[in-house]
Image (cartoon, rainbow, N blue to C red; front, side):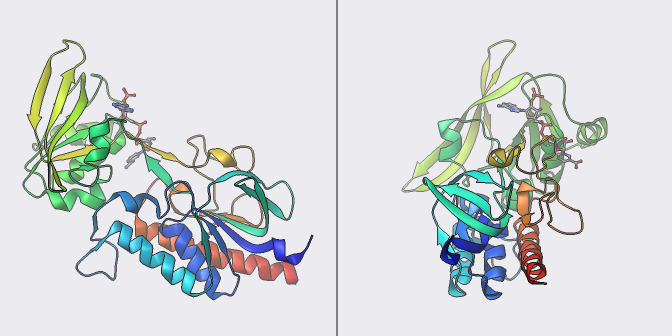
Length: 316
Ligand code: NDP
């Protein structure tokens, strides 16, 4: 095996975690390769304004932020490739990463494949994503000051998002497909006690209604259907938040590293080590609690430093 084919670091994923890991490992002269994956730039590429990423006083568009992060990593020698990794083999060193029918070898692998918010799959939902439809209250709630909002879902995410959104919205209606809730009692009660929150149960979102004038899109309402009576109503709203859960993008790692039952990667809580020495995980693929761009970037930095130290320890 020639050294040319053996990489110090392969990073899988290109959201804030992956690209920060790329920046740090490139500056450590490790010449990382980044396989960008299905959604280059990650979840921020489907949001519009990002106002809570430190350093951008007046906010920045999500796709632009990710573009800058990529260029910053590339400036120090990171190689970003628009490939999707379909298989890995961590059973022995060097690790094997497969993409586009090719095998890449690495001494360390940083997993930064993120998570995806679950979506309903309606065409109108994707048309208005980032223009009134959102899957992240912390990211986008601020844009709905004094507006009418619905939150879809009946779990803890929906309750938490609805409570958070009452800081901004005029009214928040939780729309849930059943009349029993998966949410924990405490979270449900908190939402029920909040005077700004109303509930519509046995109800599903059939269509996002909105206008699209000269490329300017905005949500004007929601077509809701009562699943018991079949009755359909048009509910006027400006914001529709999806709180139906997240799925970590970790399917290809099943059987290769330890995962939680929910699919999130198990890491040491104090660093980014997985159960396989030399394989590190950062960002939303291992974090279902904070899920912020800045926390993902933070753990991406940690993973690069962990990988660098691990590589140094191989020389000892
Ligand atoms: P859950 O899977 O618990 O709940 C998802 C909810 O969305 C359910 O009510 C489900 O309905 C509904 N749903 C799913 N798919 C659809 C669909 N296609 N159409 C309509 N409704 C749908 O996910 P969460 O993200 O809420 O929670 C995940 C985990 O994270 C849980 O363990 C939770 O406790 C935890 N969490 C904890 C928080 C905290 O402690 N602060 C905050 C957020 C999450 P149905 O019930 O009918 O299946």
